[in-house]
Length: 155
Image 1 (cartoon, rainbow, N blue to C red):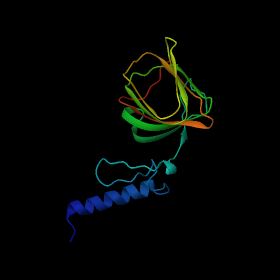
Image 2 (cartoon, rainbow, N blue to C red):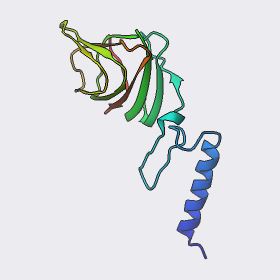
Image 3 (tube, one colour):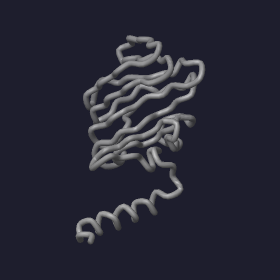
């Protein structure tokens, strides 16, 4: 005999299943979970969307993996093509990057420029001095980013 709590849990899971049907298990749209507030995503199953931001050239793609870019904190994976430039900008939110793939150049508004061959870690507080990123990889650049507040980009 099922308890009311168990039945409600089953019905909730059924509703969630029907909502995410059509999205492969393990993708960012249908992550795997072993329990409450767990998110497990297979990057091979990622569902990408164009990253449409005013002032940003077409070609960048985003896969949101947690949260909502317009509300509170969020996490995403961003993919940019070779020779792609993200112009000098800042954000009101704290940013944490884990660079996963591809060589890139990070520039500061004061003119310093640093080249990275690949995986690296970047942390900027909200309203940090402006910075720019250029993917110099032969194929593409891929990085994880976490914002502590709603996403914005200020040029």
